[in-house]
Length: 170
Image (tube, rainbow, N blue to C red; front, side, top):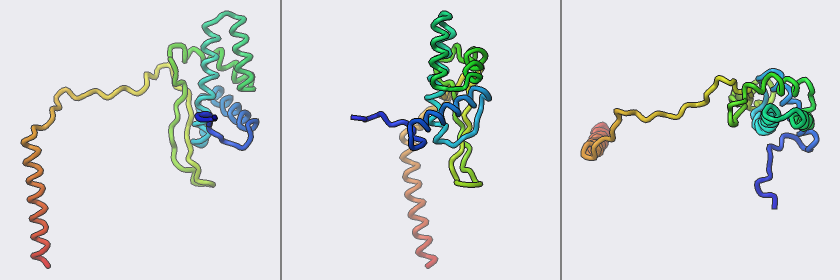
C-alpha cells in the first residue's frame, strides 16, 4: 500500500519535478531568498533541507566522506556553483541549528496572471533564534465563579429588556 507516499506533486512527470526542485534549490542556495508559488515553496522545503543536512554532515566529517557527500548533493542539485557555495560559505550558518533551515512567508495572490498564491522562501540566518514560546502572564488570574453567574444574569436581563423595547416600538 502507498499510504503516506504522496509528495507535493508539482508537475506531471518525476523527471520534470526533480529538475524543477533542483533549479529552485540552486537559486535558493545562490541568492538566499527566492519568490515562487506557495505549492512550489512547500515542495522545495524538504528537498533543500536534505541537501543542507548533507552539507552539515560533510563539514563534520573527514575529506573523503565530505567529497562523497558533495557528490551525492550534486546528484540532487545539478549546479556546481550553488553546491560549492552551500558547502563552503553557507554551511557555517547552519552548524548549530538542529533543523528548520528554510522559512516560507506567504505573500498573497498573484494579481497579474493566474491568481496563484505566492510565497518567499529564504534560508534562515544563523542569528535567528526562531519564534519564542508565549509566556504566561504572571498577574492573570481566572475570574471567580460568582462574577460569571452575575454576568450571565445581567446578559439575560439585557436581552429581555431589548425584546420588550422592540415590542413597544411596534
